[in-house]
Image (cartoon, rainbow, N blue to C red; front, side, top):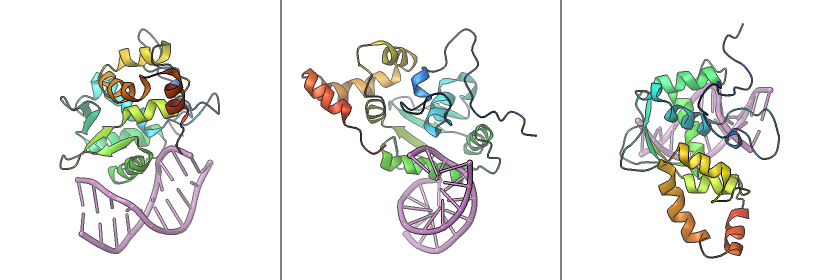
Length: 174
DNA sequence: TGCGGAAGTG
DNA sequence: CACTTCCGCA
């Protein structure tokens, strides 16, 4: 028996939302998709009960510290039904994000990584308009990202629609 | 601690 | 494709 290992996990409903729907699935392949590691990290980061396990680094926007690597690995392993998961393996997965430009390491600071959130939202979800719906909901949920997304993005996308279209339709090999 | 190659999985 | 597993190297 694999207790607590369902195939797809939607955040338990109730009062508040957890995360916009579009963040859980890739544009193609509707319905069920396995959770991505960066979704999971974001999910933990969002919840107060994991404050002592993983948390945002105040000061540097998008930067987070894994305070308890073993626990994060354990939780990740439980979610993916991979009981043998450990921080060594999890961190390898995080390192693959460097080339994908989703994350990078904050050198010198132990267990500290930083989201390249501006490079994350737009290439992955080009249908999102900066000024509307889903992304606004997202930015309300994670005001921390407003800083990182707005500045580098507006410098690229601010000018006119064609620029925006070009930048946002550029879909690197993600 | 952190890195990245290499092979393997579903 | 997004990891997982394993490992030698620094």
